[in-house]
Figure: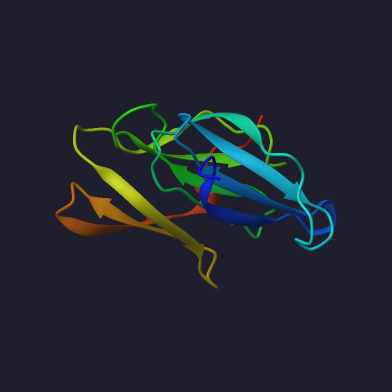
Amino acid sequence: SDLAIQPTILDWGDRGIQILCRTKQRRILTSWSTNKGRSWSDVTFTDLPNPSAGIDAVRLKDGRALLVYNHTKSGRSPLNIALSSDGMEWSEPLALETLPGEYSYPAVIQSSDGSVHVTYTWRRQKIKHVVINPAELPPIN
C-alpha cells in the first residue's frame, strides 16, 4: 500500500518498537510492534501534519524521542523538531527553518558526546548541518 512510506524507527525498550511514516494523507502515521517487528499494530494517524515529506527520528540518551519533520500540510517549510516521552504525545514544534523555500530529507543522530546532529537539504542548494545540545531543548510537559 502507498498509505505509509519511508518509516523511521524508534526503539522504546520494553514498550516495543515504533515506526513513524510519511503519508499522502497530510499526517504522520504510526504503528507499534511488541515482538521485535514480527507483527505490527494497525496504523494510526498522529496529530502531526506532514506534506508527504521525509521525516527522521532518534531516541535520545535521556529517553525522549526527537523527530525532525515539516510541520505543515503543504510545502517543505517550516522544518521542525518535536519531542516525545512516549511516542504518542508530541511537544509543540520547534523551528529549524521558517523562511520560504524547501527544507527536506532530514537525517538525525545523537553522537557519543550527546550532541544531536541534524542534516537536511537547504533550499535544494546544499546540505545543512545543525548541532543541538539536547539539554537546551525545552522539557516535555
